Amino acid sequence: MSDDTIDTGRRRFLTAATTVIGGVGVVYAASPFISSWFPSAKAQALGAPVKIDLSKLEPGAQMTVEWRGQPVWVIHRTKPMLEKLPELDGLLRDPTSEHDQQPQYAHNEYRSIKPEYLVLIGICTHLGCVPMYRPDIGSIEPSWQGGFFCPCHGSKFDLAGRVYKGVPAPLNLVVPPYKYVSDTVIVVGEDQKAA
Ligand code: FES
Image (tube, rainbow, N blue to C red; front, top):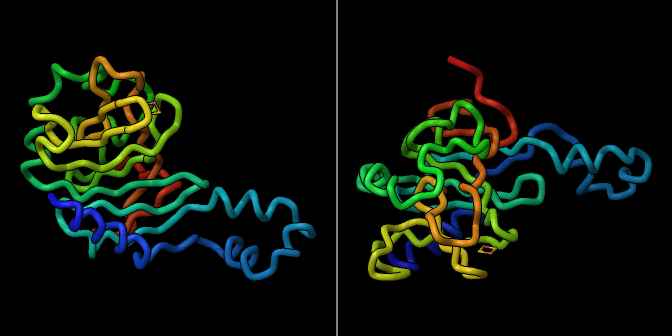
C-alpha cells in the first residue's frame, strides 16, 4: 500500500463520523464555564464512549479517532493480511495474546470481534510513542511483513498488534473495549456483550 493510501485514511479520519455519546462533551465544549460549576463534567467527557462509522473505511486503510485522550486505530484488514497472521507466530513474543492486553471477546487469533476490523490503542507498550502503520511488505526492512513500526526505539508489531521478539516493547498493543451497534458501526469504550 502506498503512503497516498495511508494519507487518504488519515484524511478520512478528519471527516469520519465520530460522535461522543451523550451530551456531556458537547455541553462542555460549548460552555467552558460549565466545568467550574460541575467539576465532574470534564472527567465524564474525557471518558465518554466514541461511536465510529466504518462503512467508508476501504480495505487496507487505517483511521484514527481519539478516546480518553488516546489515539484509537481501526484498520480494515484484507484477506491476505489476515492469512499472513498465523505464519508469524514463531517470530512473536506473545502470539496467542496470553497477557491481558485485550478484552476476552478479542482474545482470539485476530485480536478482534470481526476479523476484518482491527481496533487498537495506538500507543507503543515500550515508552508510549505512537507507532506508524506500515502495511506494505518490505517497507521497513526486507523481511517486513506489514504491521506497525515504532520509530522511537524500533519496536515492531504485526497487523494484529502483536509484538515481535527482540524489540524493546514488552507487550502486544492494547485492544480497547468496544462493541458493534450495527454491521459497520462500533462504539469504543463499551464492552461487547457475550453472544
Ligand atoms: S516507545 Fe516505541 S519503541 Fe520505545
